Length: 391
Image (cartoon, rainbow, N blue to C red):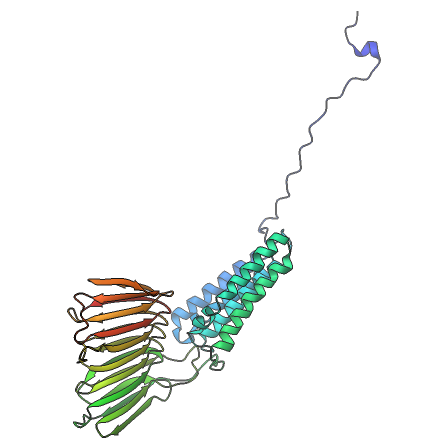
C-alpha cells in the first residue's frame, strides 16, 4: 500500500513558499557620498585652508576680513535644500536669511557699515516675534508659504537695521594703499587756563588718555589726517582731538592715538572710543564731567579721587555699546554706579552693595556716602560685559 497522499488525490506535490527579501538599497559608487555638494564641500575646505595659510605669511592682505563669505556660502547651499527631502519654500527662506546675515557681516568687516550696526538691528527685536508667529502659524496650517513670510520679516529687519538705520560710509576699496603716518602736536602749559573742555575721538586702533605737564600733547599714527584744534579764551579752552576719518578698507592700517592733558586744569571730557582697545587713566586729572561712548571696544576707565562737589556727584555718563569695559575707582572713594537693565552683564571685584530700583541696578562702593564728593556713574547698557573694581 502506498502511503504517499499525492498518489491517491492525483494532485501535484506542494511547492514550499519562499520568503521574498526586500532589495537592499544600492550602495553609492566608490568615491562619492549621498550629497550632491560633497565634492564642493571638500574643495571649499581646501580653498579656505589655503587662504588662511596665505594670510599667516602675508598678513597685509587682510583675508581674515572676508570670513563672512563662509556664511554666504552656507546660505547658498541651503537654497537647494536636502538631497532626498525635496526642495521647498522653507529652503529658500532659510538660505536667503543666512545669505543676508553674511552680507551684513561682510559689510561690517569691510567698513561699509559701522560696528554699532548690531545695536540698530537689536532695536528691531519685535520682528523676531512676528517671524515666530508666522513660523508657528505655518506649522499649524502646514503652509510653507506662511513660514516663508516669517523669513522675509527677518530679512527685512536685517536689511533695514544695517543699511537704513545705521549710517553707511561708502563701500571701501578692496585694496588700500593708505599708510599710517606719525604725528605729534603739543600746546604748552598756560597758567591762566583753569578750565578745559576736550573732545577725543578714536578710530580703529588703540587709544590712550592720561595726565601730563603740557596743556595738551598728542602723539600717534593714522592712515588719515588727524584732528587737532586748541581754542583758548580767557581762563577756559576747548580742545578737539581725533585720529581722523576716512574709508577703512581690508588693508587699512590701524591707528594709534595717545593724548596727555594738563593735570592742573579741571576738565570736562567727551571721549568716543570708536573701534578700539583703549585705556583712560584719569587718576591724576581733575574732572568736572565725563562722557564715554565705548563703541565697539575693549577698554578700561581708571578714575582718581572725585573732585570737590559739595555733596553733588561728579557725573560720568557711559554708553556701553558692544564692548568689554572695566571701571576702576580708588579704594575708599565714594562711587555710585547706576546701570540700566539690558543685555549687559556686570561683575564686581571687592565689596560693592547692589540694589534694584525701577528696573535699574544700583551699586555703591564700600562705605559709600553722598555727603561729600562722589563719582555719579550712569551706564547705558548695550551688549557688553562690565567689571567694577578698585585700585
